[in-house]
Image (tube, rainbow, N blue to C red):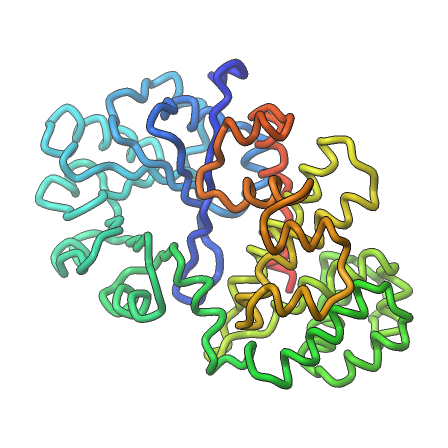
Length: 387
């Protein structure tokens, strides 16, 4: 079972399908972290509730190290185990993996599947190197097959065309700034910067409405949002003034900041910058709260998390964005140099696998940091399914 004295520090990366919808989370940890501790933490009801309905992919370097007592305590249908191909050369490992599969776990093999994969209950291939898995590996297993470390859209297309169905890596953010998708054109940049400036100044609702009317896509997403089941309003919201009344200014500002990322890509699929911005914002807010800061400081931390991806959204230097906006100096320092009270938080939130020393330097325990991660991912998953 889970030992709070050995609390693991985990990195989490979103895994998306061919339509760029989040479908799973890839779990990463330091080599010194025991896999049993990772699995025990992921099996906690609070963790499962935060990550639902996404699966968790966990590397299993030594399958025989996972005992039966731990296995029976885990939600097998929500955990995907990633086994190195070399481990399947051992007959005892194959037998153990087959037993895990019988209990409901899904297994992926990292590397070429080989002749032993079906015997071990392997369902799919995980591949993170150059080249592609053999057609035999992909065709002999039902999948889904996962391409990780996907660098760009060309690599994504090659893996997709080869038959892989799950993807993670930098491609998700580079794809979002493709000039063909319009986020970086001059007119759009000017309009978005104008709206951001008004939001930063807590402008009058009529000024916000004037800018919104120039952006049909943003107006559409706002009305779609407030009429969604997530808000549960009994009467339909038809205009911006009604949206302000039902949301309140604080929530309106937050949602508008996120909705800047909501423009779909050229192929009609969602922009993966949106849930990532939501995750950073919610985790920054949670960290600020854990450190004892008041509501106003938490709002500023939220803004830092949302705005940290604006340079990628708008395809322009962050210094130029900051120069155009009336932002708090602590927000500016964090965005430009990862400096000041919010800078250390942002740098930590951006790390693939958080540094325990950096967590301690911030004045938090690993368990507190995990709580901030849960809050960030919970809200990001909600946002990805609401907008």
